[in-house]
Amino acid sequence: MAKTTPAGVGSGQSTDGAGSGSDTAAPMTHRQIMEALSGLLLGMFVAILSSTIVSNALPEIIHDLHGSQSSLTWVVTASLLAMTASTPLWGKLSDLFSKKLLVQIALVIYVGGSVVAGLSQNSGTLIACRAVQGIGAGGLTALAQIIMAAMISPRERGRYSGYLGATFAVATVGGPLLGGVITDTSWLGWRWCFYVGVPFAVIALIVLQKTLKLPVVKRDVKVDWLGAFFITASVTLLLIWVTLAGKNYDWLSWQTVVMVLGSIALAGLFVLTESKAAEPIIPLRLFRNKTITLTALASLFVGVAMFSGTVFFSQYFQLARGKTPTMSGVMTIPMITGLFVSSTVSGQIITKTGRWKAWLVSGGVLLTAGLGLLGSMRYDTPYWHLACYMALVGLGLGMIMQNLVLATQNQVAPKDLGSASSVVVFFRSLGGAIGVSALGAVFANRVPHYIKDGITALGPKAAAALSKGGSGDGSVPKIDSLPAPLQTVFKSAYGHGVGDIFLYTAPCALLAFIITLFIKEVALKSKSGTQAAEGEKAPAVDAEPARQG
Image 1 (spheres, one colour):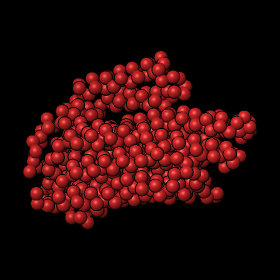
Image 2 (image 1 turned 90 degrees about the vertical axis):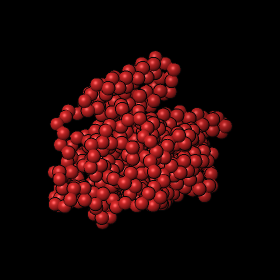
Image 3 (image 1 turned 45 degrees about the horizontal axis):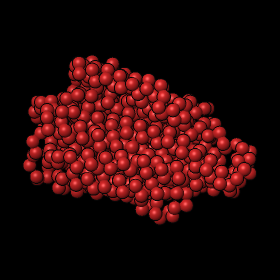
Image 4 (image 1 turned 180 degrees about the horizontal axis):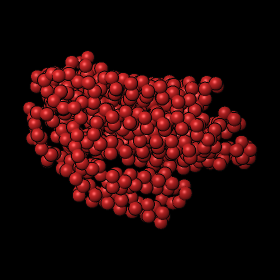
């Protein structure tokens, strides 16, 4: 297929900003696209920064707020839960209202949650504020993909998706580094981890106002709020069960039965509501397309791998290896470098060749291998081994993450672009939320088990020293304040516990890889979402389309 010029927006409709009076769906130059994307990428940077900047500060934050290991998990899970539950709603709203206004609203929500989070005096308040941040981050994450699809054709989108992946990588590595420096700086402290993103968000608001110009298709329809409620309630109840099971009650208990059945019932009500709604949050007809169904399932398992790495690496380097928050960020650079390189390079090559499936499959292989190897990590594993394993994980994520969205966007009608894009992001966030909750619960249970075994091996005197140290209550400990023999026991327990987490995560990556094998490669379209919407009245998504090209 010949290379085409990326398409822009036309002047025949009202726009989100000042527009030109040129021909309908006039092509945009690379410079015009980059100007339009600058504020969008900055907003995306803010969203990723908000989730990664606290990762290396979490042990310090939870210790200062007198929280437990479950509190630490929920600080992460609350944000992921809100992001997951709100993503489909943001996607549907983008099909109905101004995308530019929605992304600005998402930024404002993020700023509000960040400011109040920095003022938190207990872990409960912090968790609630993280949920607010998650709502804003959900909008930014989903809308970034949707707006790119509206401006740029699938064939050209690879190179720009690479820029999005690069932004993700920079924010992912910059967040922990910045958070570590802030936490280690005595005159700042961890609260500034929540304040530092505010200036970036304000700048993004200004840049978006000046550079982002998209047509506004006004449609007089009602939002499916009932469907939004049911999907939020179902996901929330499921995550509460996963987080509390095994600690507050047994996995096989009446509480488990009630919560699981309740979540299933709410999910059923959501499906029933969607089947009858005029404008459903997630149009069920999308799943008649095999590619969309497969990419959604693959994204679910990729989410587990993606979020588990950023959450549990910080605990490993600080609690198992005794590193500072700053050094914890530095030591994850190999993973982020791999993600940066693979997302950028794959995007450029996809634009030149129009072929994308090989990248999905290769990414699944590398991700599975990297996670499996990380499952062997212990507190004294040589760092160069870990660096190689992390690089494999980063390379795999960079190849598979953005291209799952691209494969989905390439197969939907313009009217469903927002909903379809948000479906992939939704399942990725859902996988991350369930993964962090479940793996966090497993981690909280396994670490005390390993500590008990280590103390038993040391003898009765070690148990007495532990009780004096005050670290036997399940809270996140200050390991360097313990006697030397106990420090080794705790470091070994946390190192072994994190290794178990990655060992449990590897099968999820393997499932994602297997699913990608069944995704049919369809040649990338040469029209942007805006061009397609203006140039033809495309029908709703039907069954799997015929192979093009």
